[in-house]
Length: 211
Image 1 (tube, rainbow, N blue to C red):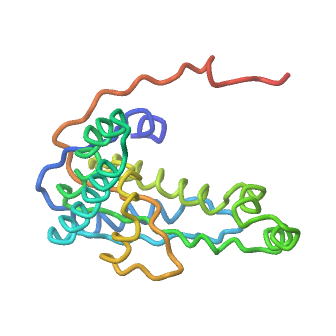
Image 2 (image 1 turned 90 degrees about the vertical axis):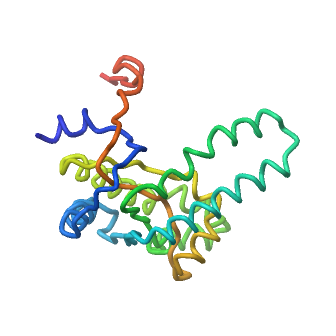
């Protein structure tokens, strides 16, 4: 398929068969992510491939525990119901044959401009905002490449951030080094069910020409 067809037919897949993914396909998918653009070509990413079922179960358990902790602490009944609804959508990654944990080095863009803003009294967040959070944009481009490559090879995948409510516990389980942060989990596998395309905003709603 060409790139436009790949973009238009990709879906967020949450149900996978038990079929394994060959290592060469995993590397093809991650190689596509590696080719994404990044500010100053810093390439602030690392990809951790998790296949061990015991590890995936442990990861899902700490995510579920974090959800239950929030439900126990809040008095907001709507939030409690919302979290209960979101729980299965937060831990389904444990059923995928492969989960790619995407890491970023958020300190990789500490250039002179960023340092200037921080020396001028801006917080690190405010300074990064003025720089456009380049590490986030760069990793986002890599993740999109990863999703498209997986689809092109006949696999399904899903971009997950909800599990990051248990970020510290996940980083402990995965033994993530201090300079790296988890930014997303991407379960990948042969799809059992491919959802319909969700409703998208029309071009008229999202495009403005300044002529």
